[in-house]
Length: 384
Image (cartoon, rainbow, N blue to C red; front, side, top):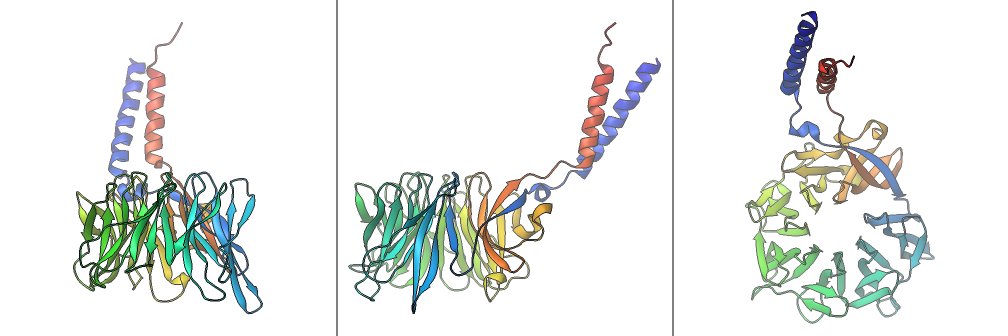
């Protein structure tokens, strides 16, 4: 009898603790991960500054130096072991090559100056360790690449600026726009071949966010109502969910778009006055971007948005070891939850990688779990 009474009391305690844990369970927003800051490079003039990374740990970036009265920018590739390869630029023009995106096969895209003498003419370029720098032609820029080495950007030669897609062995083709459209530009492409960017739908006015399907069909994503008629899409995930910015009556606003929801205004972080821009999205619909006020880099705040958690300042989610950092921008996010951005430690600005880790369960839940384990142990039959 005493043993049964003792077990019953423990069961009652577990029930009370479990109920308390359920009542005290944190809301969805309290389950947002914390982030540890890893500095990748400084932003000091003359240092190698990283501009893009991939899941393998490779990176590309640029180093800006002074040669007499000239400013020269040279690109580099750094593998996951830390070995650095300097990337040459196109002949002609001044010394300039910038690489902005990097895929999982270590192919990078950007632009280089291929002008004549000191007259600049920027060319879209693709680089990989085997082939080196590939020139995609004058008056162009490469702004996105997927893991099939398909490249998107814009080309200006021979008429209005047009969005393009380029593939190895097939070359460049421009993307369709409605009759009467002006400028178009592609900024992102997923592994399905869906492309996003923007199009001026009436001459050089009415800039709308745009999606091109993998079979080349043009889809006008429109804009949010109010303000100037201006919107652009920068990234698309494998579910064809799109992010970018639009201008509303409240200034720039980051948006999320899907076929089911249409365009959603993500708002702006408190204390910022120039609105927000969404730069990237992963396959879990984690959206990252920057909310800004007038001024320098330090006037920005990086955000994370998801449908469950809403808009969150990443500065509020730094773990204990990273509390001395101040974050200003968020540019890229992968499916592991790593986020590339800009931060400051002391007096130095850095390109940083934020590594996500989930918060520990609450103490009440742990206590309830421990008590339950105790009851299970006490109720186990005793072996003679």
